[in-house]
Length: 321
Image 1 (tube, rainbow, N blue to C red):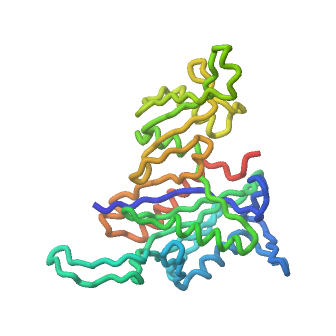
Image 2: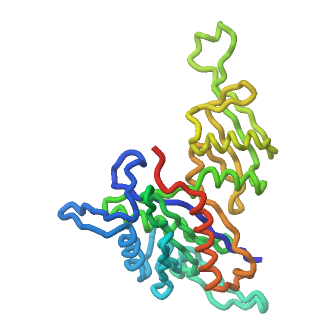
Image 3: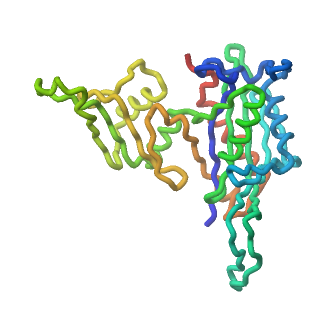
């Protein structure tokens, strides 16, 4: 069974070399870009994103990644409403560099000898979604959605090309989780949490040890934990920044750091809680839309939009101060 999913993440853009995330630009406002020898004005981030799509219509050879990358021009579709502006598109991408034999699985006949220069090109849907400004909110964060098929995907190659594009404009593109709280809650509710590790400095109660600079760190590990709802809420408040505490208290013990291990996209990942916003949510595409490799394109585009609208209702679209 070939399954397909959607990687959902948030993004923001800031001037290059600006320290901190609070300098993120407002995506629906005019932007001035400093090219060194001249300054060019753009009506909004949409003009920049549209330029990226149009500049990548011809296949680009990323020799470091050993992949080809391009945007199908006929697939670019804009969706503009009073609540949001979105664009859907198809990315053609594939790897090269390994010789192989293309074999008919039924007859076992070798159809083709694949060389190191032959790229296995596949097509994936992507979407950029930016909510419209409200009277009291100028939006700084948007949503990216990238389709994956089986073990193949386009998030890494697409965001790499995007970052290089924005770097040439003296801008920095940052990719984050769509929402740390949503991400962590989804992991817990779907049983993907495999381990929690609490860490603290191990201070010996023996006065004789006061001569030592450090006595190491203590780890407390919970494997496949079943968490109480009160503890889950405390954890969510901690990662969403709704508490001023820089430490975490469990059963009167103070812990300075927390690692969580979880299963995502078929792999086990481990991250500090404060770094978990680097990961992307994965949403399975229903079999009614993607059935073992057979896809209904119109339904898939609608599903992309509905997925983004769902997360839009749960996101904070400005960088927290």
